Image (cartoon, rainbow, N blue to C red; front, side, top):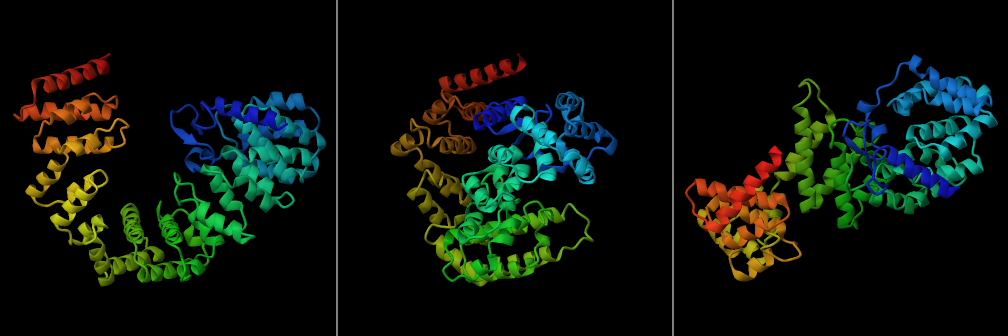
Length: 478
């Protein structure tokens, strides 16, 4: 059974133009917009509710299956909106009313058998979601069907429905926890929404592992706030640096997409924010300062795009607290202390305490990691001194390593050479040899631009750059 269902999931993914489960993306109704597994059901823009009359066909399918005509139901299913580009979630509200009102007539053994056929035989994602919906709304736990559900619960596309079904099984919360320990994407989002922190292990897992790094804290910040005793953690004198950073990220998540992720529904949101800013005042770290700056930017950015008469108290409070802490003498002194050790350089720039010597010293000590510090240098002479470091033989070799580890440094140096009019043959020849068109194309454009400005490059170098751009233009035309 397990092998059969896994093969079906693979076929369902293929039918949505996905190359493999590892790719985990598919095109939205052939539009060319690619989304992650499970994302589409969470975006209202793609899920406008269908009129009730358009759901009549699906009602007929369910009624036919419940009355024993399974082949007829499967045939009728191909004429419903889910076979014409609609998602099941667009019909879910209407269908929920229908099955609730007709539960006694629909909850038959024949319909349960129909559900199992959808879950084990269908190659359509929306048909499987129909099956999961019917099982959830019309039937109690059934061992054979639950075995299938557990497999679907481990797939992001079906997590919203299947994980809810896992929760109602015997020891469902613990079973769900074991299932999702290594999950990611929207599967993880759903797990964090559903899991209850029955044990300290589960609570700590939600807090530390309940956020997908690519999706960020927009989805997870509110569930984490409800389930992980944030105020208690904020007041813990032994709070680790890692947990402090997580707390900062959770609060940032409240404002990631404006007043939209539901943080205002938290009963103790004001107490959480108060405890957070008290913690920030007690314990100054670089990540905390960046987090406060980010909160400021997100709030101010979204305020620009809404009516000026709309005032959200939590936002007003957060802006006041961010301004107070970021402009405090304690923060200024801490930044100066770290800047003098060659740390927190961007923050030093923010409050105007950087000197060119501090920046140059940092570039000398770690030229590969700190090449971008160049932008903090104020004097022309300092900028030339910094650039000249990379013309030394040992640094050239490090920039041009065969493993390409420092390819981003080469890209940065090309731009600096262009700015100062230095047609360095070693770096530019190396860049033109690169398969990465971003590097090679940048090098060619800079050389041709310098030639227009009257800055000479060796003939072979200029010839290569002009030929490269001519080939690119020809390829575009063809």
